[in-house]
Image (cartoon, rainbow, N blue to C red):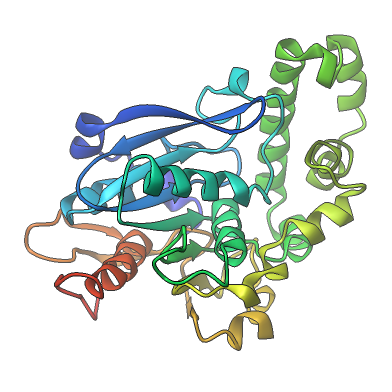
Amino acid sequence: MTIATTLDRRRFTLTERTAQRHYLEVSPGNTVQYFLHDNGPAAIIIVHGLESSAQAQYVRGICEKALHSGLTAVRLDLRNCGGTMHLCETLYNAGLSADVLALARSLKTDKKYQRVYAIGYSLGGNIVLKALGEDDAKATAKERLLDGGVAVCPPAELAECVAAMERNGRLYELNFLLSLKRKLRQKSRLFPSVYGTRDSINIAMQKLKTLRDFDHHITAPDAGYATGADYYHGASAMRVVSRITAPTLILTSTDDPMVPVASLQQDAVLKNENIFLEVVSGGGHCGFIHKEAVALDDKSPRDRYWAEWRALEYCLALEAMHKSLPVVTDM
């Protein structure tokens, strides 16, 4: 189920036709790219996973469904992703929730969207949960930057998820590691004063045999952490999920090889009445292919990507509290 979604080549007519490319400086020297699909007063920010981009099929799949449902969609490229290496002096990491909050703030204050929701997959799910937890808990619902969110298979306890990948997904780990190394070499060419010369980078690369090595020697210091263990602890959304005040859905599967269910079944989640943890069987990591094609209504396109429909359904249910939208209760 985890790899099955990569075998299908899908078409996204509305997404391709309506994309407007925008840039946002999220901090000095760091600018992110996003694609805005203007379609009404409520917007959904869609955040991709590790070594992916706003062009990922699941990102475009949610976007297409949102547009058919009358919502504005915003596809965010995390730092250095989607061909934006030259726009950032830093790397991206699992804890960059401030970038999502900066985009939400811009959508509400600059572009005047009335409500903003966020949907994140995998690493993007951790970032979305962290952003929801860091959004001002003292603010009224009207003042919040994020009005709700969905996290699909979020590695909200990073150390446990890296350990699970080492046990169950060595091929995934190697694929991520090779991609991250390529990206670091590109960064060294663009910013040699920050990341070192070609020769020094190549020497450093020889010592990086695992994703844990990369995070300890590269990601952690770039993100401001002393060690990889400090990074895994501090960047994990579980540190702040107890503070989430906006309605939030966490969707996960019992057979996810990288995100153990137990890592999400913690008191910080279970005792927060604003969070609904939905656990299904047979979804893999961000797979969730339904046995039959489904849709929200007769006007929507039908496909088998159940998690995309479920995430959108949840956001539509939240939006229904603000305007009279139909709410689907059963897939």
